[in-house]
Amino acid sequence: MARDDTPLWLFADQLGPAVYGGEHAHREVLLVESSAALRKRRYHRQKLHLTLSALRHAERDLGERATLLHADTYTDALRRFNRPVLVHEPTSHAAERFVYRLKDAGLVADVLPNPTFALSRSGFAEWAGNRQRFRMEDFYRDQRRRFGVLMDGDDPVGNRWNYDEQNRESPPKNQSTLGVPAPYRPREDDIDEKVRADLDSMDLDTVGADGPRLFAVTPVEAKRALTRFIDHRLASFGRYEDAIMAEDWAMSHSLLSVPLNLGVLHPLDAVEAAERAYRTEKAPLAAVEGFIRQILGWREYMWHLYWHFGPDYTTNNKLNARKGLPAWWAELDADAVTARCLHEALAGVRDRGWVHHIQRLMVLGNHALQRGYRPDELTEWFATAFVDGYRWVMPTNVVGMSQHADGGLLATKPYTSGGAYINKMSDHCRDCAFDPKQRVGDEACPFTAGYWAFTHRHRDLLARNNRTRRAVSTMERLNDLDAVLEQESARDRF
Image (cartoon, rainbow, N blue to C red; front, side, top):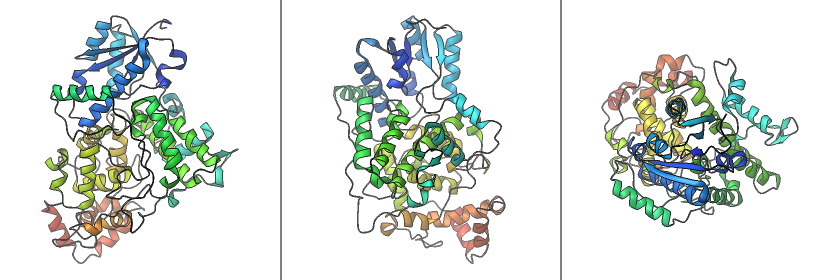
């Protein structure tokens, strides 16, 4: 049992009141900047800025409670601090093993449950039971019941759980943007100026461009970002959440993934604010339900399956994808890419460390799946090149959902498509050198042709799946299949 005056050590993704407030509001707080952690992987420059800015703002906001130590390693810092600390469960398998080694060494007094998610890990374990296959919809409905979200008694509001079919509209025609109010934009301050100078002096090996801080990193900023989204953007979010517009990178998305993953915004606060918008008739049910499903459903589901599937999950490679990431992908060299959709997605990662979920799944993930990139390398890339990427976030999103490398543990079919889907859901194809209708020739869309090459490569597996059997039948009727396969085996222009 830890003493009542034992200090609390906060990791850089545990920086909100749910961690250091409440029953811990009286405790001294330890924060650590580890230079070894900054050098450990090749992170996006803006991701490192956000992390350091969040840590240093937490020190300022906590005032006399906080001690921020700069050290080579976390162990060095804890030894210098010279007092055992409390810590909440970290957010990766490796970090959890590390924390328990520190506990064995007497540097950590106790490890507490992680309070930055709605459902506890023990609660999920009880729900999962002996399940062999998982459906997000089952989990999501249980979450709604458990937390009383969008419920009328025992029934969902509107007598429906899911309004997904109302949230799949193509981008509006004859518009270059949605025309909604801009998202919340934090003001950089002296802390950000010092962070930028320090990162310059460290000469770290990073990817991506430096740029203005676009995301909230403090509880106060997170509240402002949430309020801005709820009041001005949520109402139009649902309809166009799956659409892509070249000149509107944020569209109606909340941009709350960074403060959520830093722990400065609690998911239930976001969910409750969205539900209030519906109850007070400020936003339609379909938009509110879609947003709540992303957070209380999908985000929580990914967190818990990360722990449930275990540390070896990223070794799954059921589709035998063996190609390493090409240099232009790893270096975020968007200018080396011809396809407009792929160029814009890579440019978004390069310039902001962020693109929205459809660009991640149906452009970047779709391309990687079709081309057979290694899922473990891809998972690492998503975790380091995205400002909201963390060790827990990406395995199930990439290995399970995007690359179908777990053989169907998470998703019932591979998520791949030809250029027709991208043409429907984006405004990219009209200005692209490739034609989404063409399979063969100089203008053949790499997604359209790549879709059929992928289908052919995995035809036996896809033919056994009720959801993909039809694609195999269609492929077998293509009169130019041999030409498509020959072309795609030699393609070096995307």
